[in-house]
Image 1 (cartoon, rainbow, N blue to C red):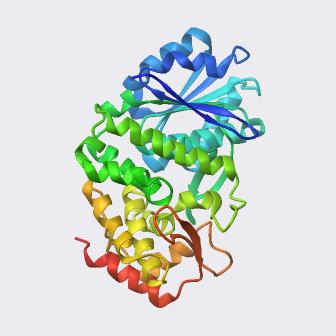
Image 2 (cartoon, rainbow, N blue to C red):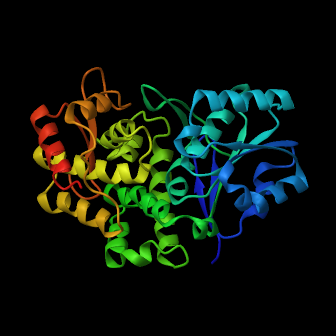
Image 3 (cartoon, helix red, strand yellow):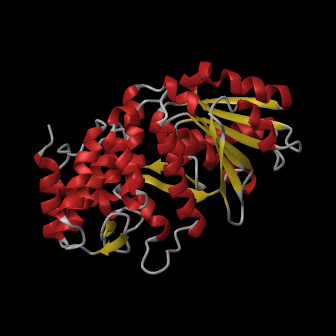
Length: 366
């Protein structure tokens, strides 16, 4: 396939390149002024990272730092270990960070780059579907704390993103399916063609060697680019649009579930459940029609994503939702839909409807 270059405008413009075998593009993005590169990678991906490391080592002094798997890497302790390593190696503002891994690696690596010397150049090479369409684009970085997910972080836009679709060929099926949670979310909030493609052939939509998945990846990235260019730091959108908050559709409940599960549930799985929850909440609050609300469960389920959850009681999940970043004081706020691709903000829904939506969410859980 021919590489696709998606431009992200704004104060710090950069390109997202979607294609295959993209490692050779890295030096062009990093630039000739960079001398040292910290290569922050998921430790279990050593073999997959080989070609990228080979390219970097031809041009730069490379400090390779293996990171723990999954959400365990997004901690203050791991960030501090990276800072110590950068300090010992004498990294300066003219040096750079390259991340290689899934969303957790991207979030942690981006946060390290954002905070070292108040910001150094970073290039993301996402290796999971979730990271490609979500974490690698948009400049959000962060780590988790005991209080919740991504509550400590910074906005730090990358110098570029290389979305190498070949890495999806090595991705476990469950991880690929989980990434579809964010892809389908983009269909509901902005691009219904995504839903049409998934519903027409769910198998093709999740085939990393086929032609449908690359189209879905590009569409989901375009959705995110359009949103973040218009509202990088969640200041809010125009004409009632939630702005960048729209990307958190389904995430209020999703983050509460992830917290209840000790961050062992895949993010995309939690997002699928959270989208189904908030669709029912929007229906009960008079925002969303029955058909579109029901479409959430059928579309997510078509690719094998969960749509229900009964692993925590209502009060525990409500407490988790109250620390969501969209909350204002004691008032819960949700991104909802007024119709397909018509996002809005619901502030202060009734507890009766919050509980009724929870009851619906638990009803079909195994």
